[in-house]
Structure formats: C-alpha cells, structure tokens
Image 1: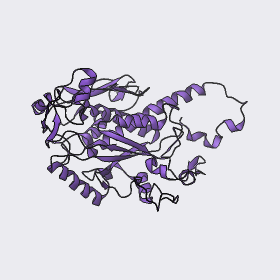
Image 2: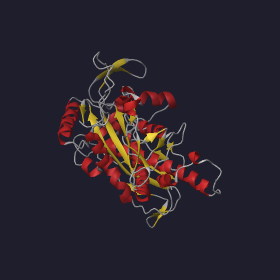
Image 3: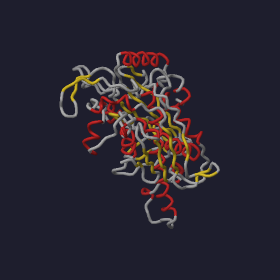
Image 4: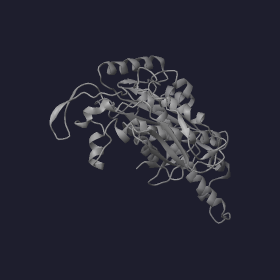
Length: 415
C-alpha cells in the first residue's frame, strides 16, 4: 500500500512521468513552525543531477505546500504537498513496450495489476521517494525541537570499496584456524564508535559520494565512474545513526522498533538487506562478548557500557544510539545490451535508454534519514499516547518495588 504509519501517517502518490509527485501527512502535531524551506533542504539533497555520479535528469524538485498550515504554523490537520515533474522523456522507454527490464519491476507490476505505467518505471521509480523525504523533513524538525534527536546517514560502501571503520562483514567461509576461536574482533571498531557519535550531515555532504572519508570517497568515485563508462551499474550500503532517542519506543511483539525500522528501510526502492547493531557480525560472537553490560550514567539513569545491540533490546529502544545499515542493489536499468526475453517470451537483446543513476547510494542518504525520522516520529506518538492515558489513572501503591521503574530512572522514559 502507499500509506505508512499508525499515528503519524504518510501517504505518497505519483509516478515517474506524471504531472507531480507528493504526499499527504496526517498526524503532525499542531503548533510546529514550518516552511517550504525546512523541507526543501532534504529534497535538494535527494534531487537528481547533483554530480557526474548521478542521473542527469534535470529536476529542481521544488516543494509546494498545499494545506495543513497557516502563517507558517501547522494546524494539526493533514499537510498536503507536491513537487512537479518537469523533465520527463517518455520516448526514452519505447523498448520497454516489448521488453520487461531484467530485475526491474516492469514484469511484476504487470503481473500484479494487469496494467502498468508506459514509461519510467511508474510507481516503482525513485521519484516516489520525494513524498517520503518531504514527510521525513517535517517529522525531523519536530523531533529535533522536542527531543534533540539527530539523524545522520552516510555511504559506507560502493561495490567492494568499504569505509574502513564500518562494521566488518562476517566471513562467508571460516577457516579451520578461526572457526573455534571465540576471541573475535569487536564488531564495532573504535573509529566506528567515534564516527557514529560525532558525524554530521555537513561532513557527509563534503563528498560527492557522501562517504565521509577522503581516500575511500575517491576510490568510490572511481568505482562508480567505471560502472558508468561501461554502461553498467554498481550497488552499495548506507549506514545511519539516530542519536538522543528516548528509551521505551517500540511495540512488541509484531511492531518491535527494529521491525518497523526494517519495514520502512526495505520499502525504499532497490534495497535488498537490513541489519541493526552488530547485525550478521554479531552471530559469530558468543553471548559473553556480545552482551551490553549496564552502567549508571552521570544523570542517574541506566546506560550500557557497549552497544552491540544498536540501541534496541527486546524490540524497545534503550536510550543508546541506534545504528543500522541498508544494502542497495546495483540499479537494474543499464544501457549495456542484455540478452533477455520479450513479454511474450521471444528471446532478444535489450539496451535500455533513459537517464539513470549508475549507483543509487549517494542519493539514497536523505531517503534513509527520512524513513528513520518517520519511524521514530510514529513510535514517539504511540508511546506518548500510552503514557498520557496511564497518567490519568490514580497512582498504584500496591505493587512491589521490583515491578516499577525506580524514580532515578523515570526521567529516561518518554514524556
């Protein structure tokens, strides 16, 4: 479906080559000062044509607010917004009248609906994510003002080029020498811990690849250009950190925090994998190494000495930094000729035209941030509604102390 969220609900609309794309956001709290400029920042980071590493499609992606605010203040009613499509070239897609693009959504959309958009990928196009990014910018402004929450994503790999400090992937074929060795290297290097604690969007945006490491960014650039020159494409990963999230968010058992986060991330076009905290690397480490011991913070609340959990335990946030990684496949639409088949099964060769990203991860960064903001916003509103409802009841004095939160830690909870 095209709607995400329970209390903060985002509905996106539009196809690649229709008149406009956009969103309706329902559940934004009233009284938030909001302008088009607040939203435009993230849309501009997402827009095509930013460098020779992205599609040359020339879209300004200027947002037009339609409803839900007056004199720059949200009313608490649905916010409608749109962005006009201005640089469509439907004639570039005549080949797809006969051929479904390999690994694209042409065939599956036709199978599902019995009809498909004639050009540009229709609803499966990354143009759809404009509504998500706009909605995420609104959520993020509220989260920053109300809770000081910070969300920063960055490119952590392109092809086989990895940011040195990112989580090491597990060995696919363990050797006889190390499969019984439990003294495993930490999943989080000291450099990575420092990176997720301090990285800013300004640092990320210094590099066209959005990888905040000069040498690695240059190698990533060369890898993307190599794919582009070969009329090919390449995939990569995006890592994201969410800081200052209150403890207590998440709705066990089916809507655990990491479950909703994974749902949101894997709904982004071209995603193929999601891991949170130590991820797959954590499966190689015994519990005695992987457990995060509790400590008493300076403000009296509990924290953890390590953070292999990635800020989530039992499906509920624990107040530590939340960090996760998403894998994006190599873009399906390439200009290199591919042996495939037409819709009727006739073998043939397809060399797709059109303007496409040779690698999506540099432009995926603000999309990941937006979906993270939408998830946190929705979970905060749910938890706050529960706490507000409970606060209206008379105090319970009959429970043993082991069943309630000690007063020193009460301030770590939402509200």
